[in-house]
Length: 227
Image (tube, helix red, strand yellow):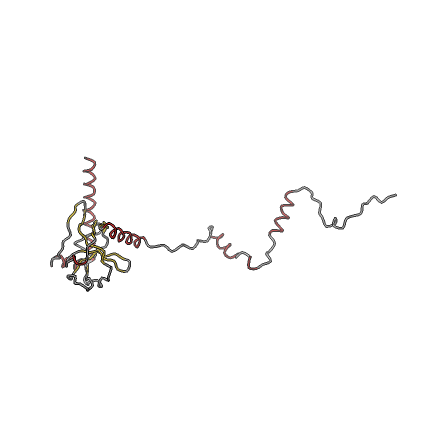
């Protein structure tokens, strides 16, 4: 009588019969994939994962360095002035009170140095910033320009070579266009110094100017609707 038991193959004992259960086979695959990595360099930083998961968001990516918007506006205005010869800019700050108010639209024209005179309002660039100040000394050849704000107590540093951009030829305020005064009277200079040192008076003057600008805008809007 022959032995009914078949001879087992050498590798047969190591194999497990598949019972056809997909969940068990999936668990076995996951258990094998979740084993600790052999290389410590390739292990994930669990502190970073835990910190980001506690906060509920991923870690912020490093931002690329950006150029300030004011510097971009200044470079664009200077480029337009060099190409076209004329550019319009919006006045900001209070250093030119009471001659110029914040929000005034200034028309700047490229003007050679030899055509400038004492009392002209010029656009200059210093340390990547634009300034609209008045010439306080008659320009001389081979000498730096000297400027100062009408509401400033001290003069500005000398204008470096290439710092001159142009001269202010027109001012538009509340829909009215006028030429800037080429001379600063003693009364206007005294008012500028008072506004320089008196914050309360300067704030009252700016508030009055804002109310007038709003009233002018409303009146211009009503005229456009009526027409």
